[in-house]
Amino acid sequence: MRSALFWLAVAFFIGAVSHLSYVLIAPSFAMQRLIGTGQADTPVNRFVLLDAPEQMRLLGEAEGEAVSAKCLFDISKGELLVTAEMPDTFWSLTLYSDKGADLYTINDRQAGIDRFKLTVKRAPGIIDLLRGDQSETTRALSDGWSVEIPEPTGIAVFWMALDYPEQRKLFTDILSRSSCALTPEAS
Image (cartoon, rainbow, N blue to C red; front, side):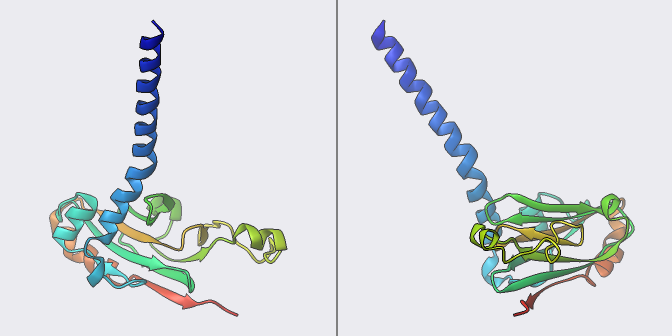
């Protein structure tokens, strides 16, 4: 009887470790694979419209369903300024860490407008907070147009729905006026 309980406990432990490993590690590997594929030819801190194969690979959507763009970012040397111009349709802008965490999302209903600027900053570390280098009056924590994130690298995904495939050219022209650029930190 003890032998059966022992093996049952071992099986439970192995199952728990396997499950936790999958839940904690798999999303990071999946996101790094998605971001990493084709990254060699994708500029960092630059806005890029997605072509049909890239959109299908990254988002799983055909070009007749949506228009998408991306910006691989690295804010370790400054702040990212995202200037978005979206068409009058359902759209979203989501920032993901390179580990797959959803860092920030805004859509047309939350924003209330289709043209805006979003500043992405690096959140202060624990040492900065303990030293008191950041005051509440100088820091804007997710105020809607400025967001602080804990990860220095990731991807911003611009997405908008198409009601009709014929809208693709118009929506692509509007979205192409968006930008994603690094601004040097003020010293």
